[in-house]
Length: 138
Ligand code: AMP
Ligand code: ZN
Image 1: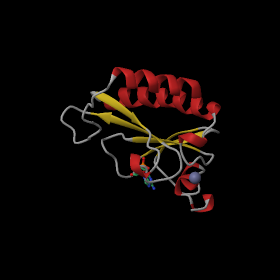
Image 2: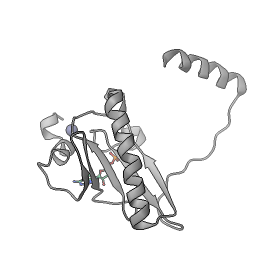
Image 3: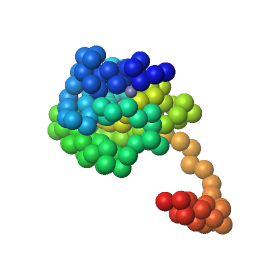
């Protein structure tokens, strides 16, 4: 899909209207049209990045700074019991819109949101080898 056809490029840049809760030169924050819970918000950069791998550090840092502000606004307005910040990359991870976005999902006791996994098992030697390999790449 070309960027001209990207729905989040259009939403972030105001070509398609959205329930906007914040906007600046870097991003737009909107309410998700199919919310996982009341107040589910999306932070969408105005520039097109397919996913986290292509995003520059400066934009990433600005997006997370905005996330802290949106989280506080949701807390003040909705008084949730918790909050999940989720950002999906790739189909295998559940990404359906291939323009980077960050989900802020307010959580309420006994809501129907499901963001869990079964804890796995680890091997100390394997963890040490993998942490060393990754450390070299950062
Ligand atoms: P993801 O699965 O991480 O790619 O999330 C995509 C999200 O975008 C989903 O939660 C959708 O409900 C949401 N979404 C898709 N189209 C729109 C739209 N036009 N306005 C608001 N949210 C949308
Ligand atoms: Zn886009």
